[in-house]
Amino acid sequence: MHTFVSDGSMSIDEIIEKAKQRDVKIVAITDHNRLDTWEEFKEKAAKEGLIPIRGVEINTKHKDKVLHLLAYGFNDDEGLFGLIDQANREMKRRNHDLLEHLARDYEEISIEGYRAYNYNRRKLGWKLPHYMLDRGVVSTLPETFPYYRKYPCNFGLYDFPALGELCVAIKGAGGYSVLAHPSEYYGDLGREDLVKVLKGIREEGVQGIECYYPSHSKLMTETCLAFCKEHGMLITVGGDEHGGLPREGKPDKSIGCMHKRRDEVDIEVLLEGAGDSPR
Ligand SMILES: [Zn+2]
Image (tube, rainbow, N blue to C red):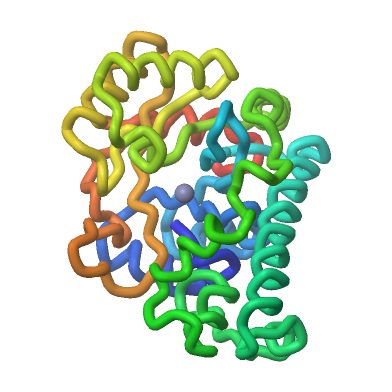
């Protein structure tokens, strides 16, 4: 789940409230490349009778792609935190590069204007797309995505931490690495090719796969489950709640949407292994 510290629209309190309403008992907040929700979340969740798991979602380079890697149940660790900062820095650099290109081509856009732009973090999503929308460069938020390709701001051009290096750091911090939503990058592959890429990911040290995810096809879920079982990898579930209402034609990603019981996923390992999480 994501709060407005990254690209979600909800506060920690609202996430806890919604989890309680939906009868969700174990919760991980996994803001993108950000660690600053944990202390507050840990305290408040425990008071409300929820079991919190420390989490973060990190941009990482693997072959020709930039993937999202989830880290769960890790302790404070300089090496890991350095890599997370690196990912955060590169995301900001990419954002700034696009802004500079736009400022050159669109008179409605300027770097000073962007800095002064009062972005309401509760709006869901990142600041620059909202600025483009409010300045009239686009008329819907999804129309902003192609601009990162139109201008040379592809993820591949940035120095995100490498997958193998990141897995070593997560393990070193006593945590677990899990590939987030494989369908986002490998959704078009057939079973055989999918198994091939999962093998490559496992070889880099990834310990688990988010097998259950709202937009996964039956083939994706089944292939990931079978792969995890065969190789002793962790099976996890993610609803990926960002707040807001489900978009038309998109699967519901609200808290508890996946309806998984504690014994259907490898949650106990995450709870036991986490030095800084309650057992
Ligand atoms: Zn993600």
